[in-house]
Amino acid sequence: MEFWKYYDVTHKEHLICNPTSEKKLDMLIDLMKLEPGSKVLEIATGKGEFLIRLVEKYNVSAIGVDLSPYHLGDAKTKVKERVPNADLQLIEMDGADYKPDSPDSFDLTCCLGASWIYNGHEGTLEYLMSNTKSKGLIVVGEPFWISKPPKEYFNLSEVKYESYSTHFGNVQIGENLGLNLLYTFVSNPDEWDRYLGLQWYATDKYVQTNPDDPDIPELLTKLNKEKYLYLTWERDTLGWAIYVFRKT
Ligand SMILES: C[S@@+](CC[C@H](N)C(=O)[O-])C[C@H]1O[C@@H](n2cnc3c(N)ncnc32)[C@H](O)[C@@H]1O
Image 1 (cartoon, rainbow, N blue to C red):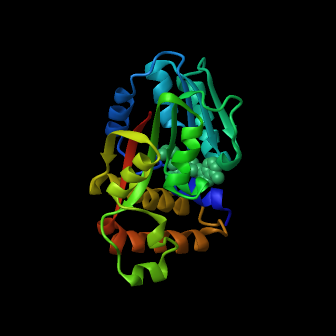
Image 2: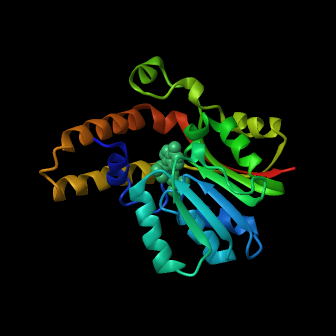
Image 3: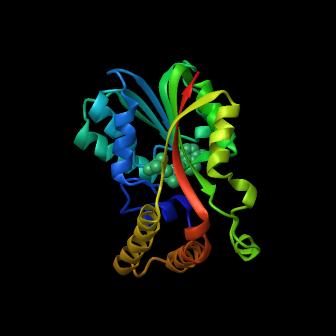
């Protein structure tokens, strides 16, 4: 089954494709205090909800990059409906290859939930820093270990312990690069349950309405494995936070 199709089916019901609530996303946007026309870059923009809300509140000039044709299709539809006159460009490409015309020029750069593009949290911060103005803001969303799951988990999961740091570790990685931490939004179990539960709900809906899709056995095998890993271990051991840094 095509990777992007799996992601589209499982995230069909999501407005925000990470374990952050709309309330926290709006609190984050309130904190930004951007001037009209400020330049914003979001890598892995998904369905574009964060960028669209930034445009609605601050009338920023935004670029969103994502590799999924499905998510970008949803984002483009929302842009037409909600901010048709915005200076908002959506680019379908690998974030690893995206080089802005003028690096070092963005007032805000972000990547929520896709740090694998730059080989992890540190690489993501380095990439975003290289595209952010002095005194500009950098916002990343990243998992962290609350505690180390047992080896049964790592035997089954594709995630390695080294894939993530701790919450404080995520902060230190930024500070060691010279960034100043301004705020963290740490998700709670309700927000995690929403993020995972909506995937199970959306998949059930898809299976009910597309019973003849030959991809269904593979779709369910993958989904059920992820559900098991979450309910058995990740719900207690894996955290998620959005980190707001300022480039000094
Ligand atoms: C967990 S979702 C987060 C989406 C969005 N940032 C949000 O929080 O709603 C991860 C996103 O990364 C995108 N993605 C995955 N690999 C990518 C790559 N190499 N370059 C750009 N986007 C990528 C996926 O299409 C998906 O939209």
